[in-house]
Length: 106
Image (tube, rainbow, N blue to C red; front, side, top):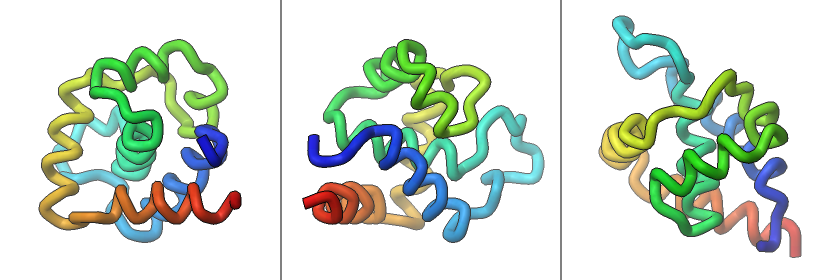
């Protein structure tokens, strides 16, 4: 990996806070912000794993959890539903973020 996952997580949260509303819906449970979920999905692409694998990584890494501001890891289905929702409005943004992050550390 060309870039630290913790550093990518921080950058992804920063980018997503500027581009996305805090929550997807006014009736959201508010367990996770859209910026946090976006960053997790960006990390998922970087490490090339599935949703369940990403949840395991988050549960095993306190550094990533701190960087993302998580109290606990989301359920894998939360990640899938978020991916589907974001793909409609931000198609290609995840790939672009990962590509930029990998390229900036060279």
